[in-house]
Length: 358
Image (cartoon, rainbow, N blue to C red; front, top):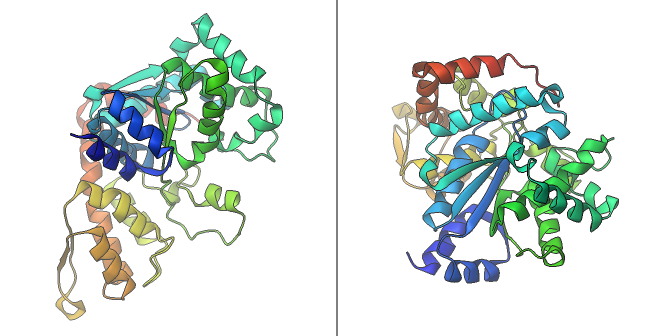
């Protein structure tokens, strides 16, 4: 695969790339750049954006030659007071999420899982954390609070001020060439780019992927930050998201109740699911409907689907039925993994007994 082909794969992932010129140079000079992604084990299940969409994005970058380091941010979740601030429970949640990915289609042969719990045993890691903190103002750190699912106006605990400093240090300690995270993590990745030359590290290329919408109606506020926080899929609003181990009935119910106004293609969560998940996993999408409503139709691309919907040639309820069927196909291997693997099932049951805290 030549550099241009690799670059195109990364472009498919990045809603924003900082900068494309640096990315091209990296791909030209390094056969296997280190790519960083990370997750905070903060709940008892993960939704389809964290599971399937993450697997799609990571697989594209590994096909482009990247070697992935997925950072399990257990200490960060502890600092952010997740799962009641119980580190042992947080770590079990992290192991559970890795079990989900085993059945999600992620190419794990090209992925290493790295735990914060191991980093914190290294004196050099804490030196980097301190250097990040010493070279950042409190105001600058507070501006990154979105990475924790917080707002700048929130009252933060002192431990949460440490979080962005640690995340920057993670990037540097891993020696990441690329940071591949959601748009909600953009501010801390930009901070890492600003600090890298001062601290003697290479500036990471930032590849920020699209944040999949929740299933509810978009908020009416014009405030960009508020819209971003409210629109994204959230574990705290269970009916706004499809979870990786949802039953077939749950998937159909949630999709049936999803916001999907006729002929509206902008900020339509069902079309987002089709664009970023369904047509990434399948070559075509079959919609079954009675003859009086046009009969069955097979749609070969997202562009074709969007045109049909915009022109009113596909009813929202028919779209919902087709999306639910495809999502259940995608989630079926994950359900089977936890049904057939006794140790995975035991871990799932234990994690689901935990009380989730924001």
